[in-house]
Image 1 (cartoon, rainbow, N blue to C red):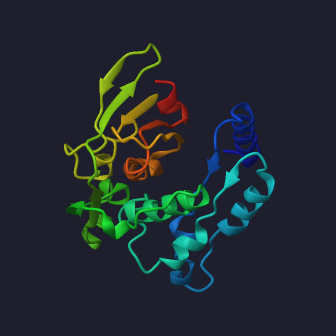
Image 2: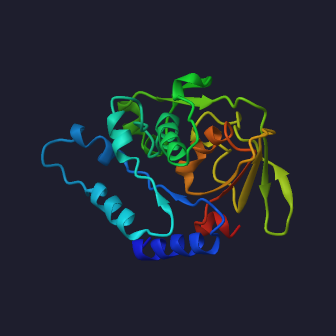
Length: 231
């Protein structure tokens, strides 16, 4: 989308909710984070300049640029090889930067427990047999929440249906939240932290949300892309 439109929307949201701590993070792609691994003279857009521009223009909310953090950890498994998404490790590093900005002590990635799936082929391989045969499968690390979490899908007419945080009916990226299910999701952790949050994001946020259950009592999630939000 046009960056001017997106900036205006973020500013308007923050202005309409002065009582909320509004934090904005734009996830850099693998080309930016692993720029040192690209072939010499490979054409690639400089996302760092884009993010600097957004940070300069966004005045009504706290902007957290996680590019340096992800670059510092780019010897780790941050982006899938056969899928366009980032990994839970990258999502956790990002969340921890956000939490530190908010004055909340973060929990290190390696202190969590995980389900491990070693046979994951993602979007780049799903419709391309040649690509699939040339690449080894990715590994899915699925965080095990520290407390039981109740999840719901909420419709515009007020109806609710159970929708788990981790859907073990899948062995691909849709294991996180069962995929993007609009228009709203709500997760209740039973924690007594006094914290609630709203996440507005695309499918990259699906593996980000499980880590929030460590810190928040209630987590609301929405993806405002029309294919999901208008359902």
